[in-house]
Image (cartoon, rainbow, N blue to C red; front, side, top):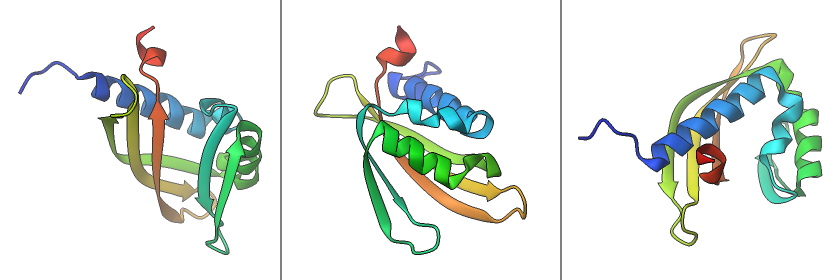
Length: 122
């Protein structure tokens, strides 16, 4: 197996490093990873009912409501896969844990993101 990294590996590592560093250090800016028109789903923490938002502003509001500054994210696994419909785009899959700082309660999370390699190569 070659020691060289594939584009998928480079993009995945770059995305994970930037996204989760922002989540842990400056969560108020996390919404900047999303386009003005986007799709974001999450389960409500108490009701476990799926909530969907469609804009960067709504994503920002969701992130501020969650108060990510009260949590630490730990990535356990990430994988990048080429998106077959659009040349060059990578789908990044991430799983890990969010740990609430005040009581160390851990909850699993998973994330799928559509990333643009040009962000990491230009």
